[in-house]
Length: 170
Image (cartoon, rainbow, N blue to C red):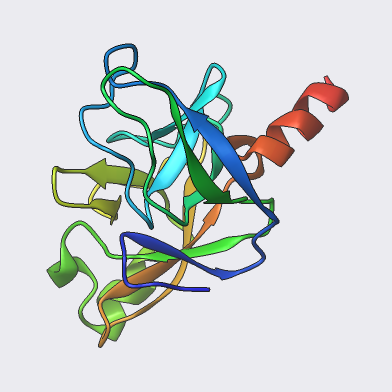
């Protein structure tokens, strides 16, 4: 299910569904959500992740956009979403490709907990951020130094299904 957009699901994704996207006058969005963007919960609607997301037990990843959203400046819309479950593996580009362009550099990133960096052009995996397993919601599992991609495992408590499990266990 991997695509050429910002992120793709390598394995373990859940079912597809449609999520509400608030109109741009009400929400913080200034443009439509694009296919391949990671989405998080914003009260009752979907918004793209921000730099530093996902944070464990703060941000709830609801999925990966599989379509462009349909909201306008004044009307709510929807976006098709592939659910991210505990165990889903995502693939994306690193923020700085030269930090993982040799096997030795990639090996030094394995199992680091990081977050994302977001610019006007893309959502990337911020391997520059430094390992913080108590806060950052993505664990680097592997990568491809030729393709320039990283595979990450979202922390269970940064997913919609995992956050529900965490609430039941409290």
